[in-house]
Structure formats: structure tokens, C-alpha cells
Image (cartoon, rainbow, N blue to C red):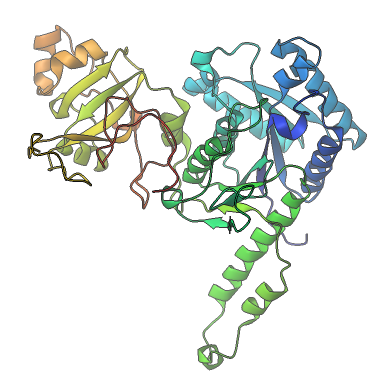
Length: 451
């Protein structure tokens, strides 16, 4: 493609995409097409990363549940297929612990950059042989989104067993309408009843979580059918042509002919000759993405507790000031110094329920509704913050006997969530079950995609 922009493209493949669900045999036909697609993209000048599931599934074929067996077999297979096309690859195994430490996170970033500069295609997977439930990503959709954000990719492809999202289950409702472009995930109404295959760890709902996370980092996220990986090339070309057309249209000076509804610019005519792309769902990126340290604070770290702050402290954080103890109204959980916590702002505004409350349950005006606003690395433990909350910084030493910092969290160690149109965060971090959302409903940590 002459004059094209070189892109970084992350392709996520689920277990059901590359391993037969019943026999646990690798799907060589699909794997071969994926390899061909990746090499074609690479020859076009793009940088490609594959996030691959399936290590445990491949290991099961040998009646051995150890992921180590599957890792070896799967990488041997990838190496053989890419070797036929003389394309070097490298394996990168990650756990959440690998990105929880800032230095290790940056080391991982540097490793990706070096490999991509060398013309290597990295193949990423969670290190199932070492990871336990406490340090797992939970699913490779999340891992792929974090990887895409880490390398500041332009595209993340989540390959699955359907063409796209639908407003209803197409297997049950023949009149289901495909959802091709999503501007606001918070207001999305789609059927996500698919729970994934027996080999996978997630379904369509985890892909929405990944899309929410990736788009917040400025990554265009695409859901497409895994059995036709060649569609990736056509979708990328279509999207890039669409962007180029819009750029051309905006750069053309307005002429009297443009005011004629019957006349159209060259850019508009170019849109007509673009072939219709393969069916897919495309999530548009946030125009003001969260990157680097802010992204790492929000999504790279597991929160160990919750700190509740008042509206004044929240306004101070928005103004780039640090978090002082005087603005803290409560603490939940057990955490140590330099561990990540969720930040919830407590509003004193009255709560109006969607349905009338029983007369025996009066609603008071001082009902406080916590809303998650970000993450922070704290300078004090939970027990210490409980003792100094609501106090002036000058009082810290008198209460604790020492004062490591006047701030509970430095501003550089705070990352705030940018609220979407639907007033939901750009990802779905776990929320304490005892807390309420803005609408007063209890949270169970599930993904909501409609009203």
C-alpha cells in the first residue's frame, strides 16, 4: 500500500479460535490463515503482536492439564508455521505481577519495542504455568487490551466465533441487527449472552470490558470472526481509507459547488468506491486517551482497598493537587504503604430513586452515594489513614509519631477516571459489593450493556 501509515496491530485469539473444543487438537487451517495474515500485515510495514490463548487446551490433548505442556506445543506449532514464511517470532509470558511493578512494566514495554524494531512478531500469553488466581489477568481479552495500551497500538482485534455484536442473539432472532460502529460503550445495548466455549475463560462480556479498556487508551478495537482472519487486512485498509477520506475532505477549501446538495467532493466520491468491509463491530477510540503512567495506575495495578474522599478533595485532584488527609472521609480494606487503592468520592447530594420508596422507609437528604473516580498509590497504610483522616497535614506527626509525607497520595501517583457519556468509567474495575452506583443499585462486578 503506497504511502500508507505504518500501524501497530494487536490480534487476540481465543482458545476456541485455534483449538478444537472437543478433540483439543490445534486447528491448523485457522492457524495457517492467521500466520499468513500476520505476515502480510508485516510485509505491508505494520507491526504485529499476537495474543494467543490455548496453551492449557493444547495440553489437555495429551491428557495433561499442565499449562507447561501446552505452552511448549503451542509455541512449537507457531514457530513451525511462521518458519515456513521465514518470519521470526518471540514468546512473551506475562502475569499481572509483571506489570504491577512500574519498573517491570517499563521493561516489558521496552522488550516489545525492541522486538518490533527487529521485525519480530511477539506472541503473548499469560504465564499459566506460574500464575495463580490472585495474580491472573482472568482472561486474555484483558491481557490483549493491556498489551495494546502498553505498545500504544492503533488497532486491537478481538477474534471470536461471531462476526460482530448484535442487538439480539442472532441464533434465536433472525431479525437481529448487527452493530457495526460503537461510539459510546456505556450506552451500548447488545446481546452478550454468549459465555464463551468450554476452553475459554471469557465470553462476549469480557470483550466489552477489553474494548472499554483499550479505547480509553486510544486504541480502535474490533470484534471480528476468527475463522476468517484475512478480514483483518480488509478491515484495516477500509478504516485507514475512511480516515484518509475524512482528512482529504477536511483539507479541501469550501467552494460554491459544495453548497449544492447535488454536487459532491472528490473525498465523498472516494467513499463510494471503497468496497464494503467484512462484517465487524468497531469501537472508536477516546479522542483524549489515557496513556503511560496514568494508564498503568488505573489498569496495571490491582487495588487492595478503597479510600473515600469528599468533593473538595476530588476538586483538588482535578486541579492537579495531591490528596491530603483532611479530604478523606473513610477507608475500606487492608493495604500497606505504596499499594494501589480505589478512590471513591462521597457526595452529600440527595438521592432520588427510580421508583417510589415505601412510606416506612423515608429518604433523608444526607444519603451519601460513593462514586469511583480513580486509583492511587498511597503513602500510608489503611490503619494509618484511619487515624489521620480528616486532619490537617501538620497534625500527622502528632497522631502517628512520624510524618512520611504531608500527602496521603502524591498527585503523580493518582490517576482519575474520565467519565464517559453514560457516566461510567472507561473500564470495569471491581467495586465493593457493599457500595452503590449512582442509580443506587448494588454492584456485583458484572458488565452492563443495556438498560
